[in-house]
Length: 244
Image (cartoon, rainbow, N blue to C red; front, side, top):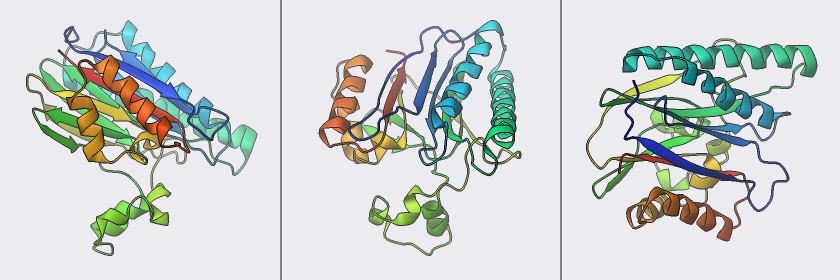
């Protein structure tokens, strides 16, 4: 059974520029699964792609994985099926145009956690006063950093490679997901977000907004409002999970 004392709250907004919101989120407290998906903005039907993922994950509510490993296996299977469905849709209706989405999902079961992701939607963890990014973006910028070709990490927001994904769901029939297991501690709070949030708010300010907010509902509202005040040029999604 899921850890009933863990729950999430999220909001998504179209932002200040876009006409359509291609972000989607899933808050599946009963299953111990929370997800943010960001449809690929330059491609057709990005909203369909992101919603397909979050709606597919809802099938976990009819299943009862007994362990974190079983829950992770079920989640990965659902994401792989969604990937194949998007590839089929692209082949049948859009030719060479891709229908893709990023995905980041947090899973909690039995006092342990796991993160599964592809693309540049992120998961952060607030533990006491420390706020850190747990995931690593699948972008050309990160690839260049890992190869030692970029040393100035402060250039990420302006570097053209920072917005070029190296992986996403729906772009290839071989889906390459990353996973990390987490040891949970009392007071841990997690933020899942699309790049529409992380691109306009620095990590330090994200952490401050979460740390100084009385509850996750207020923290999410503050984050969305901060992004809109900074004229977010993309869809904005924030989802906070904790057990307070």
